[in-house]
Image (cartoon, rainbow, N blue to C red):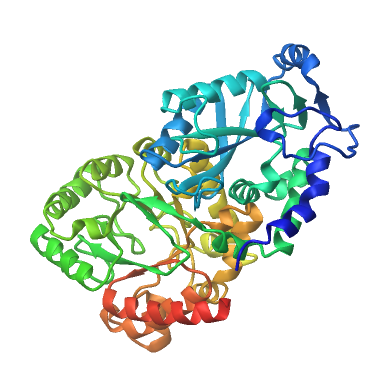
Length: 525
């Protein structure tokens, strides 16, 4: 079914008219935009072109202003261009606070060109609007975009100012708010991701709330897929469409004391052989860990953790099918994370959500890899204390606390589109609480959404494989006897919104996930 463009524009025409100043002349590229209508300007700052110079002078005295910048591009290494643009923005006095999801989108107007990546960020800056425009154009230039190219044509990067505080500005080179944001789904969807309770009263965001209501009226998220848009996770040189199917993360513990497979793959040769078997069974990720995180596990020194994991990572370099999977390293030590990425790891899985090593989030941002942030209170020695297992509303409390970790990661420089959320089954939860969390995993996701719409749209990982609470339910003391229970729990998690499942028995969980995906698609149709 095609997007109902005419209906969409009929619905949004009044909003577009309210955004643009009455009678303002538009640059040639915006000639089709609507410019008539009324707007109550009592609560907004508005500048026409003859006031632009005065605006620049007055705004220089402002300390910080919240801005929203849309990002797009479709040629070259698109993900690297995005990463570089974000770093250059930070070094140009643009402090990024929040990121939308990352969308791969079909081109508009000129259809014979590569697919685009699109997203958006909120930031603070002391630059005035025109200084900000100059800074963004300079970033575009340095990344290879030539001015005066083909209209709507390919470009390595495109940076547009959508909002600058509550300012309305009309000058020869710049219009704020961007006059066409409401008519572009590849801009509108990321903008919605940035919304959250903290901006409910912000004046310029009220316009976006109106758009969101109209967006829902004409299909909301369903329209995204129909219009050739999909949310993607950039990892390991791939763009994973994590909403299309469930991904399976094979577990490899190179430890002597992990609860399930401790000691089985403690040598590099055995570990590499196990990885190859999991790849053949259909694993999408392989998660290698040298630090046991079972209750009361001893914390390793950096040197010991590296001694265990480096030979395995070295051995995996020559594994024939290594490129078929995403290689994850399970660690909460930033030094181990750095060494792992240098040896080929694609993703860092931190069970502490960045809390046990203050350098972790900054290191992950510097390395440019995605990460899993898990919810845990305390550490493996204290996580099951009464204080750390007390909740007023379990899934919402977990979501709220994990959302704080995600926000801290974003401020450190890790985009939200590179984060996977893990509610932490078995960590700071009793057996009964693990069952409740599994049953209410959809509430956990809605809790993330309450923090910010985009945070509720990032991938969710469920680490329920062979967990002790499953053994208590079915009466299996040995972890390896809990695979049937794991499949049931994994199926429940998928139907409740999980996108990635950790598995010791990859084949069994892969089969269960395929059945659950089939059911989920029927329920969604």
